[in-house]
Image 1: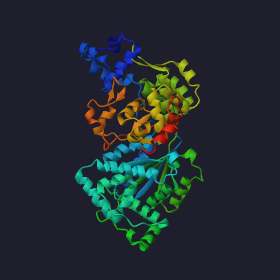
Image 2 (image 1 turned 180 degrees about the vertical axis):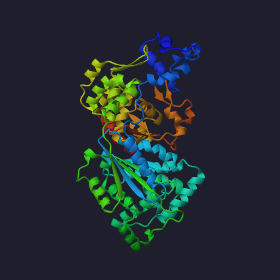
Image 3 (image 1 turned 120 degrees about the vertical axis):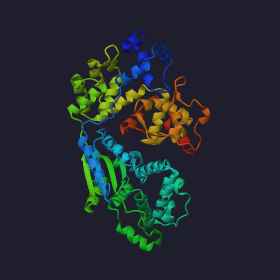
Image 4 (image 1 turned 90 degrees about the vertical axis):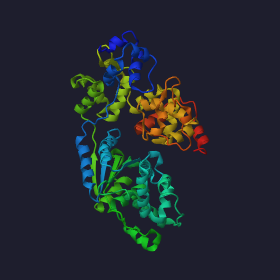
Length: 516
């Protein structure tokens, strides 16, 4: 069978059409009409190009570079808490963009394979006045995982949770409303005030978490951006690491309703707490430093991994993989990129994408690989600030995408589609459609991908928005909608700084407050 080269197929088409058709082949429900006659004329087109397409699209590889030791350290900690009742904390420290979260996510894959629960929450610099924000986000993530299990498994969890919380379960429902879907409505609890109320909450919160720690399958909690954690969260982390608290035990003597019950189904299992923070923002007098010092005084098991920037060799390997070329070929570009980014992976990714969008890096269809215009790269490298060139990149996004991104930045680092649609004052389908380009460009990530809402991830090529081919299946008020997050705090900062939004953000947020 005739195998066609890109030149034979696209020799008479312009460059923009070539790129459009190449992209269209791999993206389901986004296939441009132009590809159809080519398929009919060349039946081998689909299979032949699928194998080549990965090298002809500008993709950032998901693999890690130079992080083997750090990953092995995390895996060793996971092995220690598995099969035991110990609690360990591994801190992952580094400057912004160095890849702290990426290292943790690499271990996430193995955790899921051994059927342990991995939950994560992020502290937001704009929500430091909200107690337990990151912890609540992590436990909301846990509830979502439980709700995806079978009815029989949910009933088992219901029994375990009620056994641990007793008649005080409503306290946890108050902060995790979806827990009621698992354990049902609970009786009203006796009101406590002051210190007693806080101790009761801490005790129940701790007991709830311990339900999900077993010796065979330890619970792994990942808390990102600990440098922005509130005081209540830091205090609870300290309590969680101790697995005991004299004050709480004494309190149960005065308040019988708080009487602690031992787990009767199985012994307490392992707990691995992973925390990432920006060490350049944490001084000796920072609340996080104080909390860690207090925990170490109680002999808590705490280890710290310091994530460094990439050296030139690993930076060169990354660039060679992106450009699908030999490492020796990538050296000239790497020298310029490394001088600009100092080996910071996030800055490398964003700067290379900036070069690509500005035409400094282009795919040569005639010779079959990427080429760099070094003169243009030098000129583009004059931009000093990473946020500045991300803003320049965002300026080229569609008008509605810029607007919805800026509103999302006002909500937080993470945001759900329902809240965003209310603030945006459009339907969830139109909101997801306007957000589509940002998702494709990797500016935002999809945190919750719901199978029955695939309509939100299907792009209608004629209208340019994400929609469903069958309107009767559009989500209703009870539908489970996707959760998004900005790929990095710097991207959120850039989105907030972008120009060209025709609505007043303050006006829209105030007008939408009552609806949210």
